[in-house]
Length: 178
Image (cartoon, rainbow, N blue to C red; front, side, top):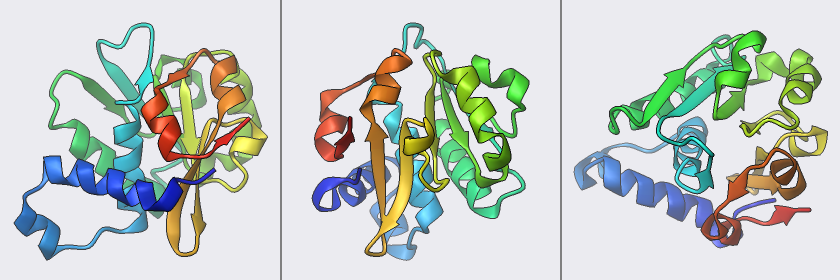
């Protein structure tokens, strides 16, 4: 699924407007992975967990992957602005993933993807990745490129099976896979 009519870029621009000054926006352009990181951070605003006092954003298989590391650094930077609301755990191992609220699965973790998704199948943990066909393999949110733009898809049934409730405002920005 993809964000409709460039909504991803509007969403990212809105995030950036609240976190950086106009001079900073003009002075730099954002990489694909920075956009992914900003979206990953923003998704926490559209998802509800049972215990959402503190959101644990986790990354597996991203430290050895340059693009995943950029996503992780972007999220950590944005989350640091909301002290006490987020915990960012980078380079977690498969034994620790049940402690996460949101798990970004980097490409270096692809060999373990089915094991990771099997562990999390009924857990209230949002999964997101840029691994090819991620949502069709059991993940919830997947990044992909279309026409040189970053797009996002949500596999609604995978989210529902895990007990994740996605706010309708986010559902309006993306096309849902049922």
